[in-house]
Image 1 (cartoon, rainbow, N blue to C red):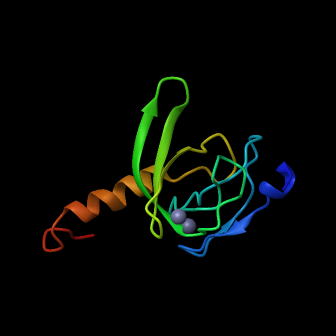
Image 2 (image 1 turned 180 degrees about the vertical axis):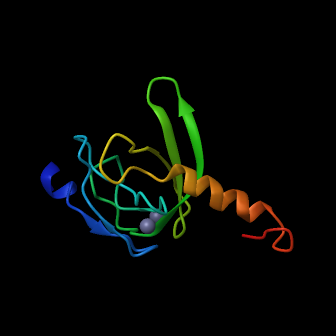
Length: 114
Ligand SMILES: [Zn+2]
Ligand SMILES: [Zn+2]
């Protein structure tokens, strides 16, 4: 598969959002809204995996050279992968929304009032 095909938009299987290709020269490998990814690569970009499980965003790490990276874990086979966040593009990753959802999960529903 060539780079142009890899950079096509897609519909997120987790939240149903219409995701446009990145405009910063790289290709999109996760949804900017719910940050879920899909297990399609063995090595980054090769699209050779036969798993095709949804990958849940479980963590955010900072690497000095690469900046912030999302840690994804496949809900089907359990593999863990690290992906660069996409911020300098149309439809940037909603990291704040992700953090807010995680924070909400830590709070007892009795205390949490909108
Ligand atoms: Zn999504
Ligand atoms: Zn998998």
